[in-house]
Image (cartoon, rainbow, N blue to C red; front, side, top):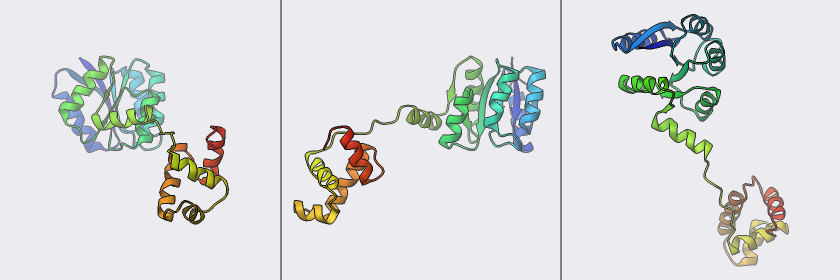
Length: 206
């Protein structure tokens, strides 16, 4: 039997989840509370296997509650069940020690599957959340190779010429020059023309 503590500040949500989980003989809900402070007390006394934790809590928020809960019961697996999926919250929860992350739109079947998975010592991220985590941990490499035309434009930028002057010099439209400059900034990871010139100089591109 998997012993659970449910932490959610919305009574209707909390009670509904508890009732649904207790219909399954595999689960035993040993605590259901609405704040991080109550959760620490209940987790410390009941020693659950899995904690279902909402991130939006009154007072101490869910992210800050994760290390508090692991401090009083290091063996508990924390499964986030929340309505929020911003990168900051997702990565913050995973880095703080959560073993799983679900959104509140998840079906009961998925919630129970996630509970079993984290209880077994594995991680559980629903697909949308997994994509966010992978995108942050393994960002797409920024292309750095400049085309021959971009190198020419970059040298003219380094010489202090405006887009209009570069366009006249190369016999192209000012719009095309803007396109090249934007591409140069992206490839060099620069925020502005001056920074692009500095980065290019460091890399020996001028």
